[in-house]
Image (tube, rainbow, N blue to C red; front, side, top):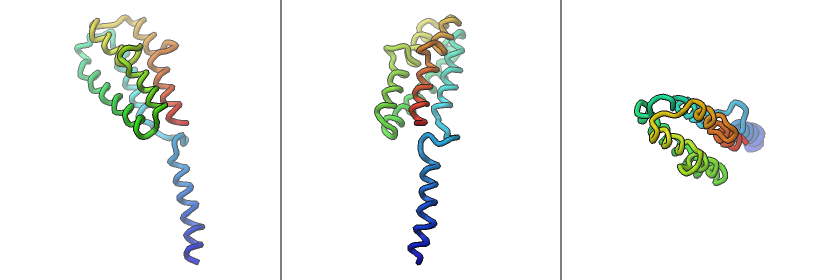
Length: 135
């Protein structure tokens, strides 16, 4: 009788708990959302001297690399490839953007807007990662 009670009560509870914690659950939180907002916010200030934001850039890049590594080891290779595109210094990426800002000192507002929100802008890359995380 006890065994049946356990099966009837505990098994459905564990199933419900598992469903609630699965990836893609409504209302699920992803630290990538914070990173997206933080990254776009910092990138939007590239019309100011880089030197004023160098420490913020370094700290943000560290958090981005940590998130990419987490997804590499705990989520999967496909998602990690999306992070690689976002962080590849040789591409139109976050790293490339910050390197250019560092070299030039400031960036033009039109360039900033395109890099953030253009057809292949940083926001689009973050959105691809978020969609993959919530599937």
